[in-house]
Picture 1 (cartoon, rainbow, N blue to C red):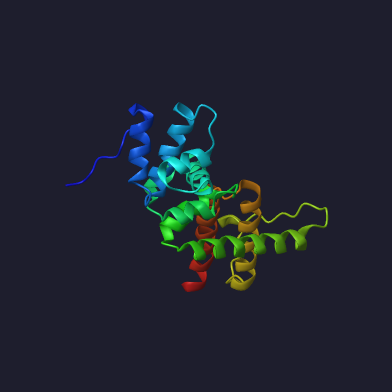
Picture 2: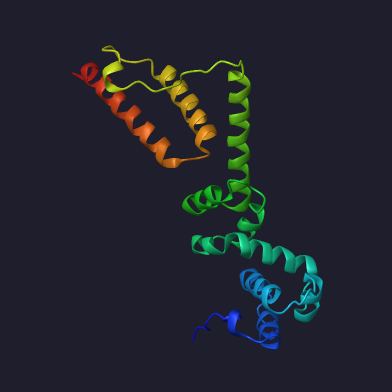
Length: 196
């Protein structure tokens, strides 16, 4: 038999405190309960006061409430609560949380991937920060050479284009996917004469 999720919005303060007190192992329920208590029952009392009522520290209450408030619509990603806590101050948190869910990354792997990409973007910014616009557009099928292309040069150009798009569109995966599809189509068409 599964328990139904408590409806904090309809509970009295005593019911809400009791429900959160038995759910202290669920950061999501603690956060949701703290959010409801703050809006409906706090009357100016602090997270510390609510923490005393449910047996948790004020800091734990604050963290759980903040994570719940920011990420309540992303719970379906089925990540550990610590993923959300780690991404709490990231401006691109949703993108990274979705990537972590898609790739089944641990919190550590998510942080490392994000740090790796940021370092690559910073390096790219330093390399191209000469004040001039650099055209890193990818060649279309009509622009591809008849001979076999220099694959390494094309890889470098693609990486530079992806970094530029990442910077400009903050991870707009649809844009990058379209550019990649166009590049792959152009490369496939360029390779066809070489394969005949």
